[in-house]
Amino acid sequence: MGFFSKLLGGGVDKNALIKDLVRLRVRNDPAITAVGFNEKDVDSLPRLQLLGLPEATIATIVETWSILHKRGVSDVEIFQRIEEHRCRVFPRGVMPSPLTLTNYVKYRLELEHSHGTAIQDLFVDAAVEVAKKAYAA
Image (cartoon, rainbow, N blue to C red; front, side):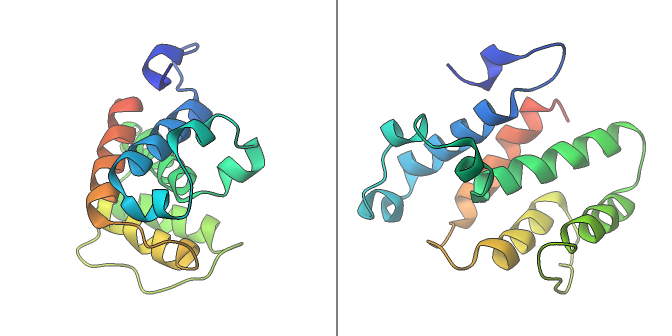
């Protein structure tokens, strides 16, 4: 059961979206299965561990972008706001150019998740699109 079937009160079940993104990566990234992780493991992940995954970073950034985008905030302003918030906990880098949603997500993933298994650009591209659709951006 994915996030499409778990819409509650007009909102997205973020945990379900993150799990769907993890499943997407597991299905398409041999490096993940090489370390012994498979789709069946996704549902047993504790919530705190789930929120520490790159997929949670993607979902959170896209969610924030979508909310602010719908309010008419410019992309530059959105990314500045997200950056200020995320840099309270994670390192700051040089913002990408051109500054697009997908490029910004890749930049944050590099800063926040470079210690783990490399995340393929094709996965990030697909995950951002899935999250945008979930948040109807």
